[in-house]
Amino acid sequence: MEKNTPKKDKAQEQIEELTLLMLYLTHWIEKSRFVPAGILRSWKGYPFDALDKLVEKGYLFGTKHPGKSKSAILTEEGVTKAKKLKEKYLRQK
Image (cartoon, rainbow, N blue to C red; front, top):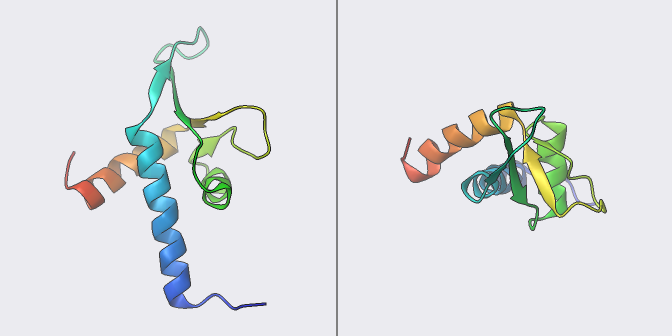
């Protein structure tokens, strides 16, 4: 079994960050009677390893594969983190 090196850890972190950013940039708002502001959803067409890590970190909900849903829900924490990543990677607020 191959050890994780600092270089691999950094690459994995960037994959997770960019996956969250792409989920945020491609989201849509789904109306909900339970959530007045709406639910932010995005298609989960990204590596399942990255999606699972984002679920573990509390940034996404409803992505555990092989689930039936083809979309994921961004949590409040996920939206906050994604906005910071947007500034980091795209230099936009």
